[in-house]
Image 1 (cartoon, rainbow, N blue to C red):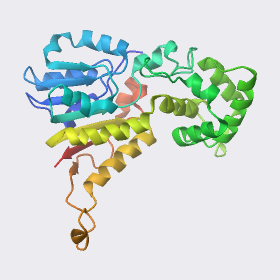
Image 2: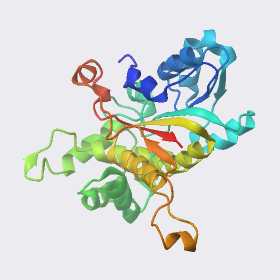
Image 3: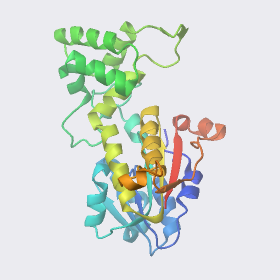
Image 4: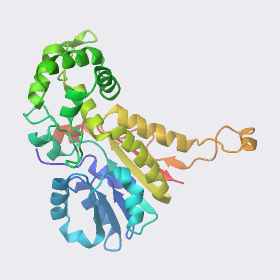
Length: 311
């Protein structure tokens, strides 16, 4: 499937970029959002582009070749956001974009092991340089650790049943491929959930949980949001697109604390509970794709965009 940037126009509206701005695309992917950002900041602007996946990075460089003098490419995880950006000589940034989740090449390439629609190895690493794979988790983690991961990261109500059966089966033969594992889950998981048939494949939530564990996604996001806020200039903007409730909850809770920061001094605490807000919420509730966008790009259906301005 052709890669289409999600909420393309809405992202640029909330970033509100101007000529000469210094900006970060924390999730470059194939460069769709970055191209729009580069047009706005023009030749005097600078884009710091983070991408873990070398193949995505290669394709993005081709797409953005006419803007090469405006871009600093950073082949790294955005958990190192502040260190890498300041290391390039920029202490403050005017805008930051996080478009979380999978890029189309991750899903479409069976060798990456993210999807159970095509057969491939149980991998799921965003950065192939990483050591931990989904096969390691499935075949080596204890039953209790699997239960925890499936329940917390996949919000899978049958986490204990799935973990127990996985441990029994792997004792006979380790799991190796995506379809093998998905078909096993399909065979052991209830066809009905909450009294009605589920449209989602029984493996969906467990695959999500494995991907989050392999890439440490939730911890990385928490660390990166703190760094992003520190890097932003006063008046700078941050836009985050999330694709499942766990990500969205982290984003919402992080900025809620900045909207109502705790009072630090005991004297001030006598008179009020919260200090002055540190951010302004630009989206009263999450912005979601239109029905037309979802029809053109089904992978956008779960996207939620939140935007904030540093005060």
